[in-house]
Length: 195
Ligand SMILES: Nc1nc2c(ncn2[C@@H]2O[C@H](COP(=O)(O)OP(=O)(O)OP(=O)(O)O)[C@@H](O)[C@H]2O)c(=O)[nH]1
Ligand SMILES: [Mg+2]
Image 1 (tube, rainbow, N blue to C red):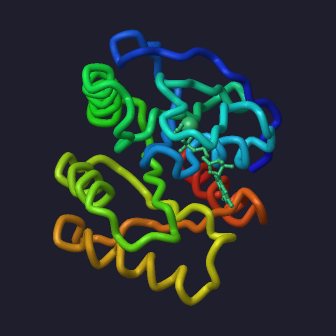
Image 2 (spheres, rainbow, N blue to C red):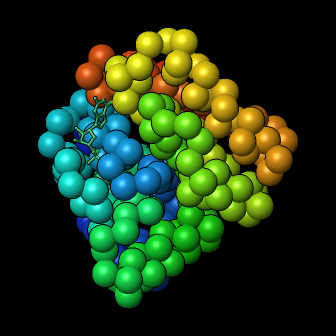
């Protein structure tokens, strides 16, 4: 799929403020700093469209990007960032949970996992929650440039084993790198199939 146009539409604090329409949406979720905003930029081919930061907890709102005037990518705040004030944190975690659980036009949720790490409890819990809700999701193992093929596959296999109890059908998996552009065309083809 070619991306002819990618524009930032708006940020919204919660699902109640999001536009009500039937535009198909694909959202990025995962731990703070896992590379959600970077992946969005990689897919659309614009380095600065979604704000990237070395400081975790950067993305705070539900950010909508309209692609080719037909569908949306949604950049969400990360989970698991301890330094955000507790009250605020509860608020945006609830807004993310509402969005992922209730948004009717959400076609697919991409759950981003840091490919360098062993399965993390917070990621396993998050994915088991999505499985329980029966929301459609795929896994994206990010920062694949940081590991060799062997350890990369081992970490992904371990993650799939850790979620198997809740997700009897293994989800679709992708590997991405903003450095080598790995995964870009595969994910765009996958999105294209579902439009
Ligand atoms: N080496 C490498 N670094 C990456 C990759 N993707 C993201 N990063 C780096 O990881 C850091 C966090 O990236 P972001 O895209 O801001 O992460 P995020 O998940 O949107 O973070 P929050 O908005 O804070 O939840 C930045 O320093 C990126 O440059 C990748 O594929 N490879
Ligand atoms: Mg971000």
